[in-house]
Each structure stands twice: as structure tokens, then as C-alpha cells.
Length: 304
Image 1 (tube, one colour):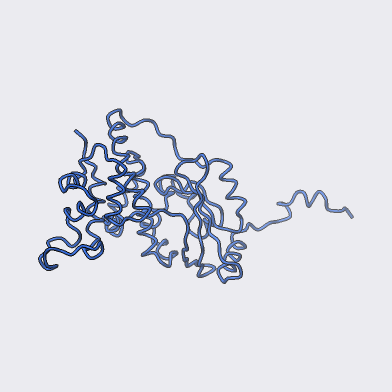
Image 2 (cartoon, rainbow, N blue to C red):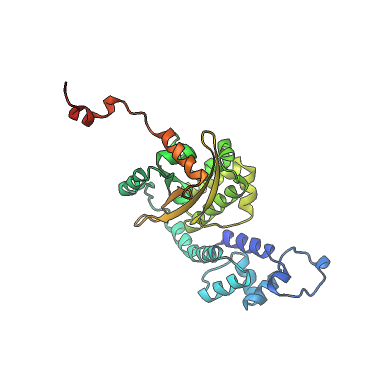
């Protein structure tokens, strides 16, 4: 007998609850006041997806064994899922069998997450843009000096605490740095949910989710909403204690041959106040050089 896919169950219930009959072109058979649910009913979702009510009920209960791609696509259309949510639904269904086999065989050995030396050197080259490498479970694997100054210095923390979600929800400084913390925090949790679905047996991700659930009321609230988010590009606004307000655009670039790792780079529009602020931040983080730091200069200095 197949196990219960609890995450699929909860996700389908959450997205069904967000929709109204009018959102999907249905005319409710009863008055709005008489409806017991705030969102769509199971039979309405089944009707929209072209499924039997019994089959959809079993899907929503998480009692799945194998679900065809056509069924998943029909369900995604019926629930008006975004591209990220659609991919997430496929992941939830497709990882269920893999998870069951892994549980039966026992968890295999896991290698610690590490950024490749070449990827780390990219951070050093980006000396005028905050940049960091994000791994599975929002683990921060490496940062350059500007990223440490903009956000926090991950290298000064125990390895397990070098995590973007932990910092965002549990460190009061994150609320001060992010102008739009109320938006950034839910997006970070939604990104963590995608990572958790991709590898539901990862003990590190489970530990991060567990700690946040215990220590943060805000995390519990946004986690229960079952939102998903793929961090690819966008804008984040920071309040920095030294240089002030910075409105920065970010790009998240997948690192080749490093599954689950992405290079995040922050830049500012040319000629903007934020670009001036980044330049100021660069000067502020630059080490102070002394003559002893410049051996080549001393060797080539003409003698008198």
C-alpha cells in the first residue's frame, strides 16, 4: 500500500482554498452564504480537471501511487497554478515513489555541500557586486566581502547556521536590513519549500524547517500557506547602517555540475544612488594597505 503523500495533500488543499468559483468561471449551485468552504469544493476541482470526484479525492488525500503527466497538467490548469507551482506539483508527485524506495532501503550517505573552487573564485572576481553561492535548503556556501557587509558574515557562524532562511526569520538584523521583510521572508520560506520537495529525505533541510517552525511564529504562518517560489531574478531593497538605502537587482545563476547550487549577484542601475552606495560599501570593506602589504612596490622602488 502506498504511503500518504502529506505534502501533496496539504498543497492541493491550500491551492483549492485560494480559488473561488468565479475565479474559474463556475456558477455556484448554492448561494455563497450556504457554502461551507471558502474556496473550491473537491467536486468542482474534479469537474474542471476532467477527473472523477473519487479519483481527485484520493489524490488530495495523498493516497497516490503513480499519476500520469496528463492528469497533473489537467490538475494544474484547473487550479490555475503558476509555472513554479506547476513544477512543484510535478515534483511532489514524482518524488513520492523515490522517497518510498529510499525509506525502505534506508538513507544513503550524503556528501556535505561545498562550492567548487572555481565557483568560489568567481566571487573574488566580483569585487564590486555583492555575491554569494546558495545551496540546498538555502544554505550559504560562500560569500564575497560585499555580500558579508550587505547582509551578514556567514563565515563567522557555525556551519549549520550559515543559512539564509535561518538568518531571515531568526536574526533581528535581517528585519532591519530588508526594507520589504514582510515580502522577502515569505519568499524565502517558499524557496525552502521547493528545496524540501526536491529531496524530502534530506535531514539538513528537515532540521532547518523544524527549527524555524519551533522558533518563529511568522515562519509557521507562511509555511502553512504552502506558497512556492523560485528565486531567479528580481529586486531587493536594503537599509544598510553605513551607506543607507540600496535598491539592488539580483540574478540567480545555476552553477554547472553543481546540482542545487546557484550564484546570486546583486547590482545597481548605472548612475543611480544605489550604485554610489555600493561604491561606498566597496571602499568601506576594502582592507587598508600599508607599505608592508606591497612587496613588489618595495622591490621596484628606486634607491637613493
